[in-house]
Length: 431
Image (tube, rainbow, N blue to C red):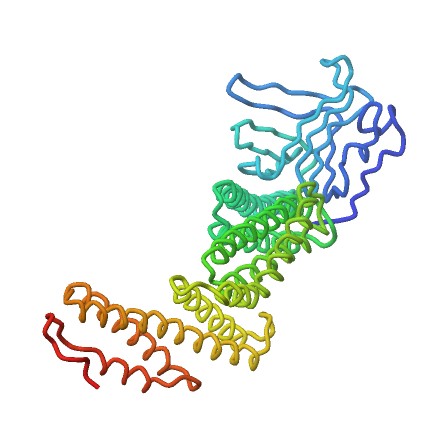
């Protein structure tokens, strides 16, 4: 950043001679890694403070000094052993973001440095001699520019983090991701400002790190919320029987849970203790979804086997559909769904045969009932029965046409055998 470094600022003797402050060393005033670049002193003139109420000059006690310390975090104005305050030290701390301007001026016998705060308070520090303190002014101005640049980015980052937290409270993780991306960009820019400001670990880095911690929690919550949303969508798809969609949603949910878990390893987040149980539930659901199509196909076939004629068509229709769906899923994702493709192909053909036979049984019964009604002169009953027979023969023909193991011609002949018109005087069915 420029400017003089390694300033000798340690008080060698406390309370007398050239001591700066009463009862403390100047080093004790600095916090953490705070590093002074300039330490300026005067023994008598002190510091002038101007505000809307007027002006006041605060002078050091006879054995002490007034100090202006320019650090990497702020400008400290200190007056040692001020007699107007029962001989106590007086202090004003001006973070760089609270300083509006700085001005240095040199005269014949004395120089001064004036700081104007954003509150419009003005602080003037006098220095003996005609030395030019423009380099100190430049140093402070540069520090102000860096700190303001950092503060603007951090303030914007806070706004985006608040947006993240609000959208997560509303259950909208996708909107949260957008705000997180922008927060990451801002913190990256802020970290670069800190690095450019000066080497080593210092307050700017700590300010960024504080928001990084908050961002980490937001990332965990975002992944966790998205995981729950996906698990909910997967459950809905599973209920609807869309097992491939359910599997894919559950898998995405697991990825989000895993990401949240990985991130929670690096931060203290008590709520994350619930993550393993939720993940275990999703993993169990994935296993169940993989087994569901084959299980449902097997159960449907068992339910259809031995069913009465009046329910056999519906039962075998369901069985054929579930067997076909199980085969389709295995062929698409054999790594996910249970079942052997060849065995399932056989089961599909078998279910198709059973469905064709169920239709034939109903059609034959209806045909015989129609014939009996026709012979009895009950045209209305005959028409109704023949229509039912025709519907089931046609359904049997359509199913048979789709599968190699079935004979659609058999049902085409059966359809041709049914009379087209029934009025009580119609001849025997066509052959």
